[in-house]
Length: 381
Image (cartoon, rainbow, N blue to C red; front, side, top):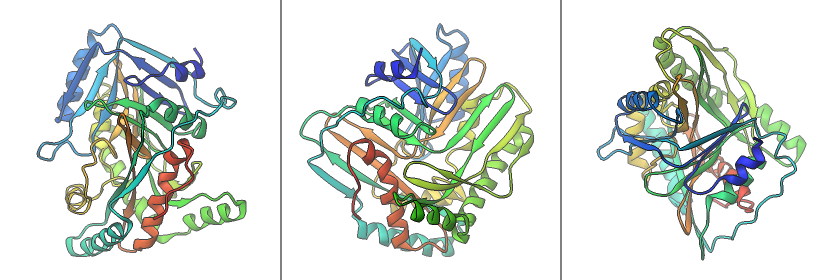
C-alpha cells in the first residue's frame, strides 16, 4: 500500500497521520471513547484494545480537559486501518489540489488586541513569577460554498514531507487538519522519543536572508531561554517513567517550509512496558511549548488573555496500539474545518524579553503553513 493511495482514499470523518516513519489511514468507527479524565481514558482505551478486531486507537487530546466544562479527549477504534511508508518521495510528483478562495478573513483578536495581550503577558510574567506563557490567535475564514479537509490535507502532505501531517474527526463533526513540526511522544517497545520545539524564526525565499534568520535564531538569548524551559519540563515529566534519559544540552536548528525552530531530541528507556504511548502523551501535554510554565498558572493566564477556547488546538493527535506503541504529535499549525468555514490557529511563546510586534509577526508567519496549503500567500497583521 503506497502513500498516494492512502491520501487519495482519505475522506472527511477518517483519520490520517503521515510522519517521517510511516503513514496511517483509518476509516469507520467500531467504538468511540470520550473522557475529560485523560489518565482514565488511557486505561479505557487499553481495555478496549485488548478485545478489538482492529487493535489500534486513533484520535485527539485537547489543550485543556481540566477546566470547568473542559474539552474531552476523543479516541476511536476504527473498523479499518492501513499503514504505508513515509510520504517522501512517494508524493513528490503528485499535483496540488485547488480550493475555493474565502470571501472573508477575520483575525481573532484584531492585531492591535494581540499586541496588547502580549504586553500584558510580559507584565504578568514578572508579577506572577511565571517563566513563560504561550499566547495564540485565530484566523476565521468564511466561504460561499462547502469546504472540505481533503484538498487541504493533500496539499499539506505535499508541502511538509518531513513533518506530522494529520486529519482527525472531532466530536463536533468538524475536522482538525494540520502539519505539526513537533513530535510530542513516540513509543516503540521500551524506547521513547520526544522532540520538543521552542524558539522560532520565519523562513525566507531569499537564500541569504533565510540563512541569516537561521543563524539569528541559533544566537538568540530569548529563544534559547524559551527552549530550555521546554526541554527541562519534558525531561522532568518523563523521568518517573524512564530508567534512563538522554537530552543534549545544545538544541539543533530545525526547518519546516515556513519556519526555523530550535529542537532537542529527548530519548529514554521505560521502566514499565505497561505504560503506553497514550498514557505518556497524556502526562506530557500541555508542554511549555504550547502553554507555558508553571503549567497551571500559565494556563490560567491563557484563559484570561485569549478571546476564544482552544479546543483541540495545542493538544495532541496520534495513535496507540494494543502493544502500547504509538506516535503523538503536538496539534499546532492546524485548523478546524467546518462545512463552510475554517478557523486557523497560531501561537508564540512569551518570555520576559518578548517584544509584542515580533510576537505578532511570528504568529502571522505560522499561519503560512495552512494558508499555503489553501493557495493563499499570507495574512497581514
